[in-house]
Length: 542
Image (cartoon, rainbow, N blue to C red; front, side, top):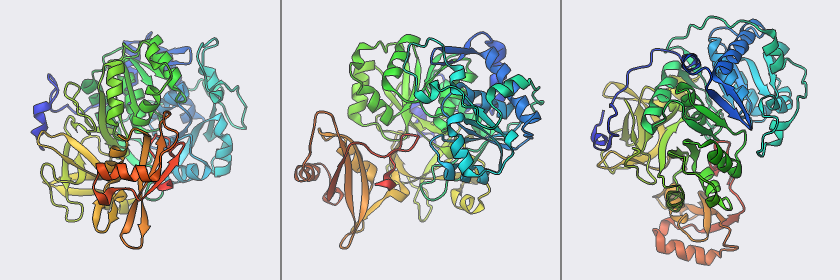
């Protein structure tokens, strides 16, 4: 394991943490005993204490076991928006000794069918507005293995805040058991018997190179991140945490749900992203911690009259998913007085394996490997290890690395490499580290554009384009070219101050700011860029 990053290691933190000897579910049992009357979840004006959360988790676990016939290691799909029921169902599935399969509520029937069938899920807990997708997916399960959720059951009666329409909707009574039915049945939960090495969750990768693949995580790999997070970013017991990222994705799941539950903190939950609502919650609830993504922060800082809100309670803001443009980071520092703490992780690593040190962060940087993480750079074709400032593929050995792709031996054979007798996961990300041990992202291996044999990394060009005074967002893709093999195309969104941008002036500006072969040969202006549910730009759609 390399140690060059120990020179910037956070003070008073150990280099290594002991392995957690309990299950993820036991984090909740501990907090419910230690802080029973503390608010666990606050959702549009209504609070749920840790005592009540624990009771409802046990009731839903009992329902899944006794009525839906869910058994040990069975998979249960979770298909709904960010709501208290998502959190309750998540921990209920674990309490029943089963395995969580989170499904993005933006998924349509074909996508749902693939995940449900590939994971061989036994049951599904879903938002009532998604019933038609379930019906179209032909999941071939019994009615008693469907459980419909009405989000409005958990909102405050007189919430003075903008609530999404889908959250306010009354019960539609789909032809299957409902959440209220399950609670009323009052079944007892089975005895919980999960060990650290047992299966915990199967989140699915984004599927940028084919169908999404299930990433099998154990309680040990999930807990590695959950227990590391609060130490690194300074989340104290009883903190106020804003949850805006999708809980069905590992970053939102780990930082905005599992971390606060471990620390007995309050989750201030938003079902849909709304920058004004976020600002109101931060001010009113004195939010201390918020994990976001770059696009969310751009949106938040663009909010009209953002300066009028009191954001002084914030102690740490950070995220990942894409590099934070320097101009945006500087605006955040000026407005809030905080650095944006960037991190790096994947579905396969159950969120971050790298985070910037809080006291010495660097901009547009993946940070340094956290506790017990061994990250190297290899030459992707010959697999030889590279040194500082040499660009190659990022590979990692860490306690939070997944056990492998669910029932996909071919993918597993390609996913790991042995170095010094240890298995390293091949991330498919291209990057490098400097003399101090900070890592930097260059691009996805599969995104590289080949212009006359010269490598063009889209992320590098995008970072330069973000400094153009007229450009708010940019995405760079490769188009085929009969002479050079490929050529660079830029797709941009203009900021509010600029109404137009000519191709000639754009190309002239690019020629002054980057090597000739990297200069986009075509320009496309759009009102927005296509994004997936995690906020990442869907560059393949361009």
